[in-house]
Image 1 (cartoon, rainbow, N blue to C red):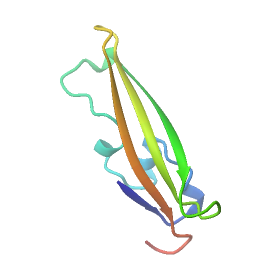
Image 2: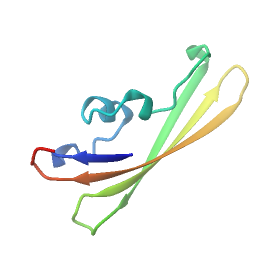
Image 3: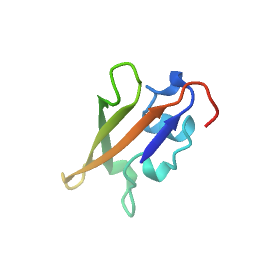
Image 4: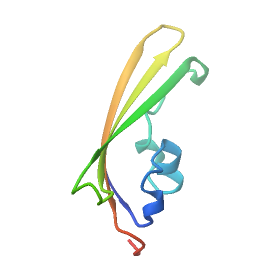
Length: 94
């Protein structure tokens, strides 16, 4: 996924909720989707790592997000990795 951020103030706001509500990313692309499970038994945790692109001051980055999903009933864990790039375009209209 490539994300173009027009407002540089939002460039560091990349939680799953921020991706959906600030940046307009489809919710299905912001976190793992739980299908055919009792959601009360599922726990999800995510951790993002940012890697700078195009020089130190550009604000552009690659985000490697790692999700761990735990099914409390079975003890099974699953890992989901998402990778996306963020390009900051200043205050112009994108």
